[in-house]
Structure formats: structure tokens, C-alpha cells
Amino acid sequence: MIRFDEVTYTYAGAPRPAVRELTLQLNPGEILAVLGANGSGKSTLACLVNGLLLPASGRVSVADMDTADESTMWDVRSQVGLVLQDPDDQIVGTVVEEDVAFGPENLGVESAEIRVRVDEVLAIVGLTGFERREPHLLSGGQKQRLAIAGALAMHPDYLVLDEPTAMLDSAGRESVLALIERLRAQGVGILFVTHHLADVIHADRAIVLDEGRVAFTGTPIELLGQEEVLASCGLEVPPLQRVESTLRAAGLPLPTGPLAVESIVEALCN
Ligand SMILES: Nc1ncnc2c1ncn2[C@@H]1O[C@H](COP(=O)(O)OP(=O)(O)O)[C@@H](O)[C@H]1O
Ligand SMILES: [Mg+2]
Image 1 (cartoon, rainbow, N blue to C red):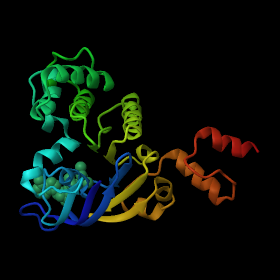
Image 2 (cartoon, rainbow, N blue to C red):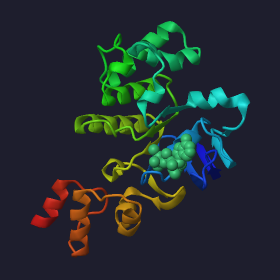
Image 3 (cartoon, protein in one colour):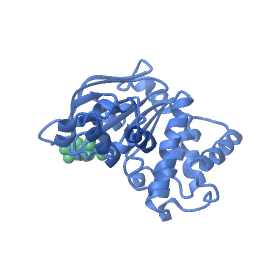
């Protein structure tokens, strides 16, 4: 389990904390979506998970290991795959396969096994055939998928994805969302930062940050009903959910749970 207990973090020279008194938990096999406007503290939260940033006060732990404890720093990093918001910040290899191999090499995985993992994760993210390409020459979306491959190659228990769909087209977005669900089914715990509400409908829980504080915590469905929270946090309700909440408000007996277009049409026809 990943736990944040009353975590506050302030950047050097900043007038106020980027995250304040943050308390949350992420279990294995669970997707936690983190939403919020620009500057609300999402990326800071992401970097706190694996010890890249350390709390000024409060405590972050991964499988009972305190991220501030230097003696377990590598255990924490090996359990938590972090995909940064800007994939350029994460490129370490001169070619794609080297870049993906970097994490498992650091963990001491043997070279035959690394080869297998590199091929496997490049196939998962759709970059087979790109092994010898230079990462800097890839498109934004390809770099984003490369960063995900690098994290997956470490076979982490938890994955932290900071706006992993931001540079992808809709097909790329769908495939990343599908991948997240497959990983959840394999027991990986996923912290998924996004500012697209449509991305979070399959999350188990969602939190919304507002100026570094938790403004909402609940299920994605509950969140969609909180129009005031959404508006005050600069989040736009996706069209299908707008239709759904309008119909519910008008008294149409829609089934509960995430709705597809088909079930709305069916309810309308009956
Ligand atoms: N390296 C930094 N130095 C100083 N302030 C920063 C730095 N990175 C982020 N901040 C500030 O911290 C707050 C939270 O930023 P961030 O975590 O990046 O939010 P988000 O990812 O939700 O856009 C913002 O006010 C931002 O300006
Ligand atoms: Mg960010």
C-alpha cells in the first residue's frame, strides 16, 4: 500500500506549499485518479510517491517503507514506476532500447531477462521496430509511450502516471487507458494524474486537488455529480456525462454505474 499522511511540501523560495496536509492511500490493484487545475499540486504529489521529492512535514510510505529513509530508497524506486509529465525529463538512453533497459539494469536484472523485458514492453506500448531510434527524435506521444515502457520494464508494483495521455491522439489515449485497466487486473496499483474527466471513469476512486488541498474524494461517478467542485477546479464535464446528468435531473430512470451511449439510448426508448 502507498500512504500519504498529512503531507506538506513547499518548493524552495515559493510563497506557499504546493501540497498541503495531503492524506491518501493507494492499494494494489486499484486505480486512483488525481485531478485538478494547472498548478493545483498534481505533479508535486506524483514526485512525492517515490521519494523524488521528500515531504517537508508528514510521511509518505510505500509498502511500509518511509520514502525519507535512505536505506530503502532503491526498494521504493523499484516498486514504484514513475512516468513524469514531461517525457523529455526522463530520457536517459541514446537509443530507445537502451533507454528502456536503464531501469532494470539499475535493479541488477540479468541481461538476457532485460532483453526479454525490453521486447515485451515495447510491444505493449506499440514501439516495436523503434529499438535503435534516438529518443530525442521521437514525437511527443512516442516519447510518452517510451517513458511508460521504461517504467513497465521494472515490473513495478505501483505505477504513477503524470498526465500520460496529454500528448497522445485519441487512439493513443484509448490504448493507454486500456493498458491501465489491464495492469490493474494484474494487481498493479495505479495513480493516474489527469485533467481530463473522461479519462477517470474507470478509476476506482478519484481525488481533486485545489491549491494543494484535497477538495473532493470519492468515486468518479460521485465526482461527476459534483458540478460545483468541478467548475471551481476548472474541470470540464464530458458531453456524455452532461447528457446523463441532465436526463437524470429530468427524472429519467437511468441505470446506476458508468453509462455507455447505448444504455442512455435504451432508457430513452423505453
Ligand atoms: N520547481 C518548482 N519551483 C517552484 N515552484 C514550483 C515548482 N514546480 C511547481 N511549482 C509550483 O507548485 C505548485 C504546484 O505545481 P504542480 O505540482 O506542478 O501542479 P500541477 O501538476 O497540478 O500543474 C504551483 O503553484 C507551481 O507553480
Ligand atoms: Mg503537472
